[in-house]
Length: 252
Ligand code: 13P
Image (cartoon, rainbow, N blue to C red; front, top):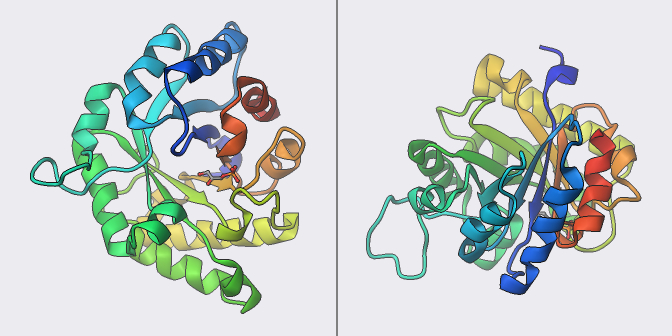
């Protein structure tokens, strides 16, 4: 299947930001998108405490809500953790797993990420699996090698184009204002596409590959126009409706 036929997705990862006071942003976003014919799916991933309320303020819009992480187990003695079932119960249709901040801050391994993705599928929600190289790895010419090993070990059996999204987020581009060049992103995404076909067979050709890392309204059109880039995973710029819509506009 030609990658042009893949419906793109723009997802906002609020990270550990947002309280009730911030609900005005998704409300505003839903209002701004009312009646707009979108060529992409839109998702907001607030902290788990806000999922239900974000859904409520976006009611009537096509915007979906997602979680930012889940535990691999369905339930049990895991104080402070949250399961994919719980996220689904709160209204999430997807969960981000393997974000580099989790891999770094919580020492999450590829195997743990794969188990979380499987837990999401078991709960009936989609997994947005994050991969990406560090600055040292890029400088050392290891980017493609790192992506290959992350895909092989973090993308579990059972992944399909319908239940899985891959997000390529170079660690050094997150929150820094830096982005790889168009050629570097094209190379990474083409490589991911090839590796996905190896682990997901024909589903790999249809799976969305998002780019994440300093996506802004000012660079969205250029970044979203790159081959095999099927949308964006947005951090900082997803917190304000006006900025987020500026990125979504790449698909209006
Ligand atoms: P920024 O858009 O703030 O660089 O964050 C990207 C990110 O980590 C999304 O998951």
